[in-house]
Length: 295
Image (tube, rainbow, N blue to C red; front, side, top):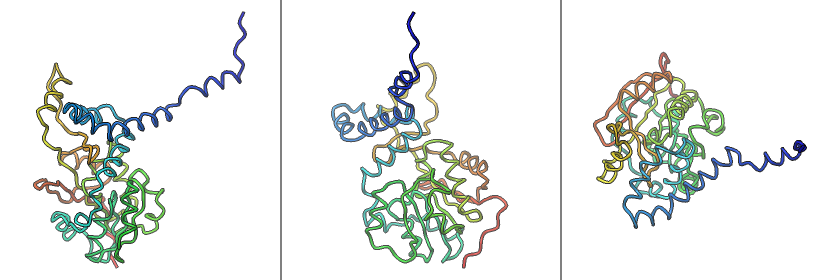
């Protein structure tokens, strides 16, 4: 009869089996490696590679992997810390701030603030603005540039860190108003992440308006349409709601009814919206809350 393995041998055997966390990290590293120069070379050799990647990331990647790919995409693009971008103000942002935000010098929290474009816009209008962004290159670029007095700071962090893990952000709470940085709602990798972001912003800005915007999807080319038909050979393709862009990351677009449903589940009500322009947007307000008067 064979003797049973001792506990020490069993422990040694178990330690050799990769854990789920380790496998997840390895998969993420592989995805990031593929999404870099390797995908550039593959796209040059076969145009199908890019179409397949746009469909594969939303379909097969987990939320954490989508988030990591999105941060890497913005880091690789590197255009959003250029002076011409940082000085740009969208007309819909100006209109929403003018109509729904309290008067300066109210405090405003900006999530996914990039290299600080919204922060600079708000500071020029007399607001006190605090922001966070998950991309370390953007945070460093903001710190190295000339920052006006109205910018309270920009720290590295993500929506998932709200409300308690960003002490520099929490120190200025409660805020009078808040913004989900340009289109960043579309980059949140799943419904759980979107609800966490809205709930986290509400915890730090419990009475004020929240400006959100989302991105429309770029039209599909012929290869992507054929690929979607191939992936759904026996029934019509489902409505296209998500995609992946190697320079913008994971993108999820929304109907206004979906924004309203998300807002209600997080304790907000839809105050105003506009889907006509290049960037759809909406202003949400915590239900049953009276705004904090700005000083």
